[in-house]
Length: 271
Image: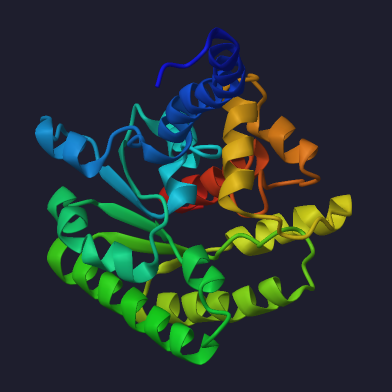
């Protein structure tokens, strides 16, 4: 059955906005969620290692740094002439996921390795927190053991950034227990402890931040659209959402990323 011209015009009018949204969503998904970070382990291994000390930064989306500010790139800009920085961040990873990628981390043979992973563990821990904490501890210990025994790298663990800026809500109380695990694991394996949570918490309290965690994939996509399509800085994205050091309730804005880079730089320079 043929479609009459009036019906065709109606279909075009209905479908046109949908097609526009699809056309806009595909590149946004790539920019915000799917593309690789700069200088991955694969990139590094494909090149000549060179003579500079190698710093591996591994973790989940806050390390990956495409849907938020990229603190590994900040470090590379500050210290790239003296060290090689490898970004082993992967969006969505838990500590178990990172441990499953240990072969590629070990293959880099880093001189230093900094780990920031666990936010996704916290987000998934609402139903069985005790088991989640136990598994998290086991995975961090196993990851540290592999990096230590197979590379001899100097290790550092970041504490996890707040979940939103209502520091007294249930999410941040739960997160505090995971940060306690990080503190204990770092001490037990002789790793440095980089107090990202404590640093950001101090800033939030000083500036009166109180916005609860409003994270969702939609919120992350909207943050990406503001940055990549509207040209807003990650700080501007965060302010639009009511945050001081975050963009969408989970990920770091420029201020948060600068704090993460400061901590690693001080560690690497022995301050």
